Length: 273
Ligand code: IPE
Ligand code: IPE
Ligand code: MG
Image (cartoon, rainbow, N blue to C red; front, side):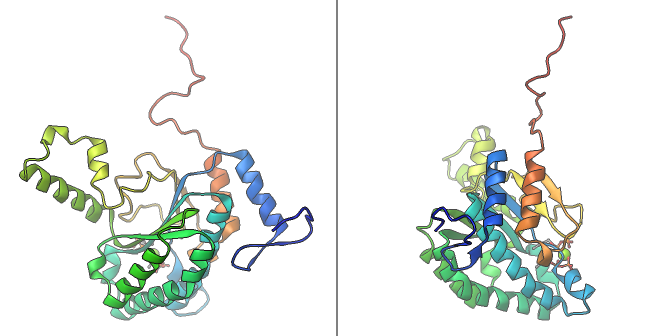
């Protein structure tokens, strides 16, 4: 609690210290506004981060968890309502079994270890993806954490797991086709709102800001429908090195953008002809 002594670092609920400097940076971003409501992140570059240091790729995944923790906590403190993390793609199943297994183990251990911290930070955990593909232990751990954090309201943290944008679009298409077949929906009534409501991640607003770490200029099958008008931010920084300072830079860049959504800027007027 900050009781006016600005030189005293304030404790977050978890007991980790949020420095006054960090609080000031966050406040400056809030004042500068607007903050994105929904930030989505393609957390890429774990393997390269590790290999750069002559370490095994898995070491990068371990260090990447530290970034997940820091970014989640920073978003909660800043007042960002939605954070969605691309954690494991449909295509990632094609990696060597040893890496896939290590990632699944890491997921189980992390959820187990971080659950208390999520509760203390007011973070509600959600997942989106083809969860049937996940090992039973993983699903169990996730279900527990989802249930236990269901009442939290500060930040909705969604992990995209065994996820791809095309997978998600197909789920919506199938659901709508079933309703048409059952006679409860007419094809001509399918508009953008009806389609979006049929997506597995329908509870999330479209992302305002999509961050990709690791420097690749592609979307790798992430949130294809939802990013129609999302602002993109790509940084060469590998995910394990991406911490709250880098997040603030991304938000700062977002705040400099002019979102036109296909219109012209309100101040632009054409002279009469
Ligand atoms: C992202 O890092 C994590 C996952 C995709 C699971 P990578 O493992 O893709 O790391 P790079 O891109 O090979 O460096
Ligand atoms: C995207 O990273 C998927 C996740 C971050 C979970 P990838 O490493 O799988 O993407 P590509 O292969 O570079 O497109
Ligand atoms: Mg990668």
